[in-house]
Image (cartoon, rainbow, N blue to C red; front, side):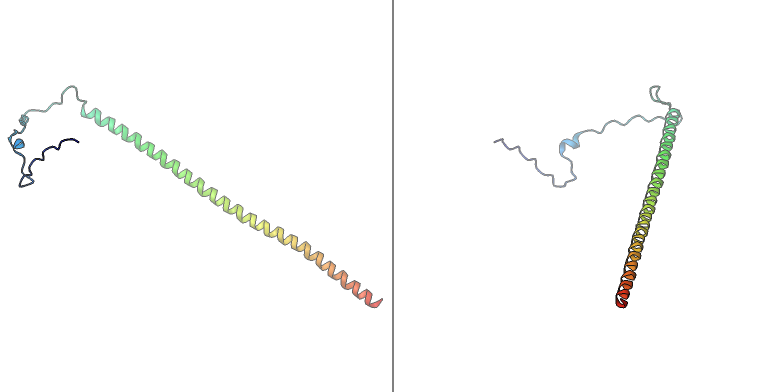
Length: 130
């Protein structure tokens, strides 16, 4: 078992700093330049115009890419809508032709049934007179 560490006493006011923190000095403030002195960036920092031009170029590139992506999205959306419309038309045609095929089959069956009925009536009539 490890020995317990002693717990420091709680300050009476939670916003009071410990004595060690009160004794530290604040870091010295940076010397301020007078307003009359022009401030020149150090030689190793990039010039602000070059940074601005770079950012504008990157923005233009990003906007062009966004426009391309939007165009691609619009084309994909149109293609999806066209595919959906074509599929609905094909289903409608399939139902129409299935109904027509069924009607044609029923027509043939009804003609056959009518002929059978007519011929059986004729036979009955012939048998009755015979």
